[in-house]
Length: 217
Image 1: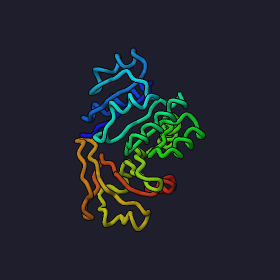
Image 2 (image 1 turned 180 degrees about the vertical axis):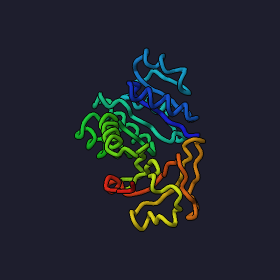
Image 3 (image 1 turned 90 degrees about the vertical axis):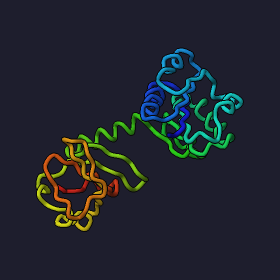
């Protein structure tokens, strides 16, 4: 179980806080709007009415046990920047912050934010990717260069083994899992002699910029 603090309970912050809590994490949600705090209090570990621009207030709720702080108040640039500054002063190890624009993102990065996110931009990119790649089921960015993709197993793979297909040698991808779609079970790091059956999906690791050029079908 991890401990998260979500600061800023707009649409993005609220949904993120609820999702983290639903996954079994401890979540403290902060906002200076009483109504949004009241609305979320039953869906997180704790919800506090607080102004994140006050370092004394932040110091009351954030300690060394907190794993990640997410600054979701991206629409208010002043609040976002001041909050990040104070979190750095408090020694928070991992900060994720929502940015309103590219310039805002650059400022946050220069302040030492571990990860700057652009929710709408990222969502649009993922949707475009999914619409372009009809076999793509899901995509998880792993690092600036690599990603994990879940794709429908091509028909021509059925009845063949991983050893026969030689996917790493031919395409530069590593198959790290095979998912049985009907029974929702995953075979992690399958044996080279694994033979593909129908109704399966492949979980592969490859370079992000090379995925679109894969010709697996």
